[in-house]
Length: 407
Image 1: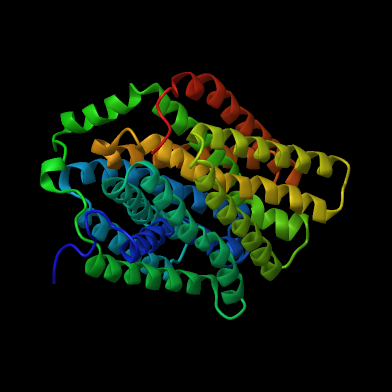
Image 2: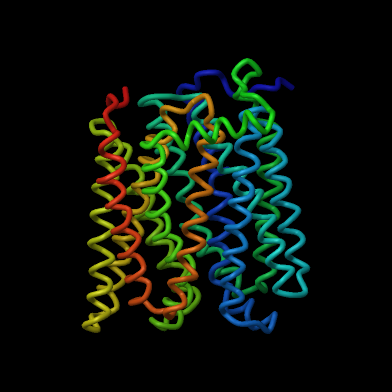
């Protein structure tokens, strides 16, 4: 079997295959999180713990995401992409199996950390491999295709999770994740070759790794884009952390209805990701970020006001849809802007993006929860982080975005 199944410059069907595989690898993260969200109340009952402790299993997952990206991203710049990717998918599978037999919430947390490491490695390496193979407008097209495939995870995962909970316990959800992990391990081993040849790899010493991080920290445009991405992602993370309780407790929806509403928002996210790609054919990525952040702010303010005046639930759901769907448009713009000028260290750059996303999101979401798991509190937290992202965009990104448009 040939080691490389992907050509150096994929076109046509080969590019579609690349987008499909890389999108599925990036879906590890949202699928791992979203399949489990409808089960939060059931986990609390079964393991005789509180809702806050169950929510902390999500924080444990983000801790794993951070660790996985910090470790696997820079290593892939030095040792290549394929072997770290196989390790990541196998780790996700093993952690999923371990959680199936979890006797306590602590065991679940440990397993979720390991799952997060595996999911993070898969996602960050998919981004790095895309940057290895594409640049310019071809990179824009590939990122939007990957976003299309990746966006299917938050659409189908909560629906699958909610429906499965009608026939299996929450442990059955992790059996599904185990099957997904093993499937992707087989796919990677048979389809994905090495996209970073030895002559393009960076040094392996700790000093070399530190040097790659130092170069990124000296790039003020990269830091600004990373901050915009992390703050906007925090909005999604607030939603992920508390939507289960808001929909089922605050709004009084059933588990199955929660899954369907979650899927509707995810469809909007997927559509906006594709629109973002079209915008970047004519305008710079920061223009796309400005548009989507403005829409997100309008939706968050609308949700807060509709809560304040006790508006109909459908109006509140519409405002929340605007926030979450618009967040889907920012992702491709952030990724393209951040990675375009750092092809030589794409693994490290992608790792920094991911780590910052989950570090900020994992920190802000529990803080918002301290003020109560309600739609009004969720909207207030979203307004704060979106406003912060707009400030960073205007004062840190725009002054240094003087490069040419993508070709």
